[in-house]
Every structure is written in structure tokens, then in C-alpha cells.
Length: 168
Image (cartoon, rainbow, N blue to C red; front, side):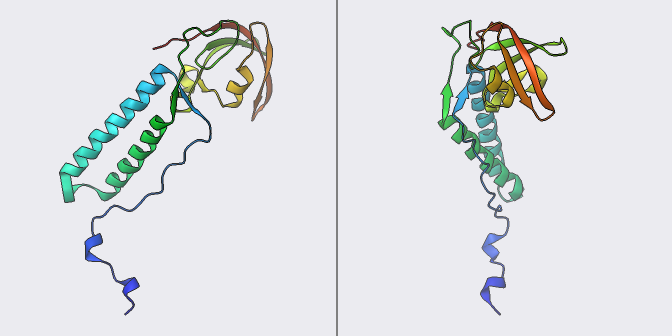
């Protein structure tokens, strides 16, 4: 019998190698809160990895592989993180970390904060600086009208106010 079809007994319980999670091609800008979020995620994963390694052969090999893969991913995100604090940023232009109040075509006022890709939370109005909305808002000033290119069609937004954001 061909050896290629015989299972190696040493492979029993060994986690399957998972492909690494893809990294964004964009610069990994982070706010101070975003940097803490990445550090906390990495610390939680490191703790989980330690727990799994303590379990030894009782640990689920797939869980171990997932934690190791995610730990590599967040370590890489941290390695390439570029901290951008809002301190000293101009208040007259939308920038990374700024909170922007806009008026849409239907007369609805919304508030958005431009954050890094790892910090996005639409339910809190946190949008990525590289999203179509983030790109439309970047560098706009109060009173400017920008066009948000959405899958549902273009929408015009008027910039009502800009807050520099927080450094924490």
C-alpha cells in the first residue's frame, strides 16, 4: 500500500493548519481606544491559548488552531498599527478620529466617527476611514456637501459639525 494513504499516528490530535486571516491592504490607523481594543483582544487570545495548552490532549485541536491563527492575526494588526490621536487636529476639517454630524437628503441628522478598520461598529456610528462613507467625509468642512456612494445609490450629505474626537 502507498504510504501516502496511511495516517501517521503522531498526527492524532494535532490541529489542522488553518490559513491565516487576510490582512487589509490599508494602513492600520487606530485611535487610542482602537489600540487598546487590539491589545485587549490579543491578551484575551493569549490567555485562551494558555488554557488550551494546559488542557494538553484534552483540548479541542480545532479550537487550538483557531486561537493560534487569530493570535497571529491580531499580533500582525498590532505590529502595523499607526496610532493617530485627535489632539491638535483642526476643527474645521473631517479627519481620522473625528466625529461628524451630517444632514442627509431626507432631513435626517446622523453622527459618525471615523475610526480604524478594527474599531468599526455601525450601531455606535463608528465607520471605517476607508469605507465609502468615510472616504466621502474625509477632509470635508462644515457646510460642505459630500456624495456618499452607497450600494443603494448616491446620497448627498451636508456637514453640520465636526468634533476632533477624543484621545481616549
